[in-house]
Image 1 (cartoon, chains in turn brown, red):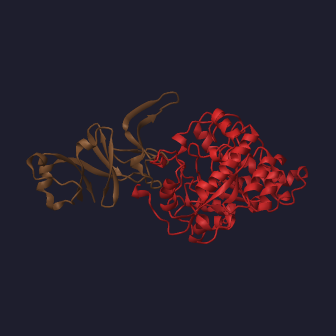
Image 2: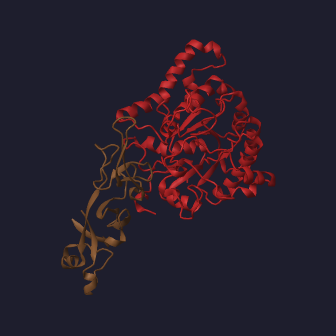
Image 3: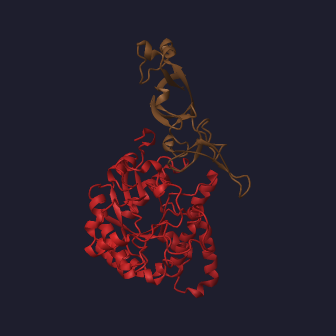
Length: 145
Length: 358
């Protein structure tokens, strides 16, 4: 499991996203209410650029005439055919049994920690500076096999 | 552009359904002052399929909006990058869904047809040799439509005549025969594309939802196929070729069976028919793939192909830049035999449209 530094947390405010290239794979990093999630930018249906799609919620109806709209900001709709995926899990919500988009672990690490464990990580586009003030900066780290 | 969508097909790909759209002002050079003024004052009647609000703006892929700010399909450079280059498309057939035939003012429709056809040559086919154009016509008037076909057809930029699935009358009706007379004279196929705003969209009135409009579109294609056969169009125009675009095809076998059975009993009503309806249909119709029906089991799809018995008549299409786009490397079932895959992806269209081997 290689770790890649992909962004600083303030680059991706809540509700926003950043699409990054990690070892030839395009991956979208999403901020949902301060938590970060990463999923593959390729729809399992026909390969559309999933992470460029609209973020929406989950509209359900248990009986006709009754509707609930929940999980606003957590459902990603492919820009091609509008297949919907749960950003937190990569799960498809139109055909849950068969389709899931690859999800990756993403977490925040301090620059100091990244620097300390440098030997076991792939180098990303950001370099932790040696000045004390930047070593305390936090970074988003994605884990990819 | 995202690298994830860039997959060059190893097999040749011919795309039978690409939608180019008009940037603001692009038709003006080809309209007389009379019609420029009319266009500025009144605009256009409706848009194709405009009965129901689309799920996505312009019914387009969200990533198909060009950085130039133009509408999807209006920017040749962006189309080259996102479609033609991305999948190494060998040839593409342009089907502009500009509502020229939908104008109730028929002379306006004729003027717009001329303008759209000239604009296609100048702004699309001349600068991009992979593209060919369909002739748009004011199809509700046979004479005006035929005139435009005779004007355009001799030019090699045009490979097809474009009609729409939902017309005022079924297309076998004699009011449209001038169109077919012109088509066979110039040996150009007729393409009938998804859409149209001529009347209620089903045989039972108006449904409520876009999903019914989209999912129910084969009803209009059914109507057209039956009409062509029963009106004796293929007896009158034995070399006529018709491409059904974006209507699917899984609905065809039961229709063939039903028509053959009915014809056996009612043939005295249409004595000019010399052959079974299914024979005319297999000889005269081609089908584009997008969006093709996706049976849940492989065996069902294989049975469908066997029931149709039209392996030479299926042709790949992307429908770029629309939201129900099919990707050349992903849309066809993986189990298709290589020979059939090659036919559907390129060779059937190459034969129909007489595209040279590159």
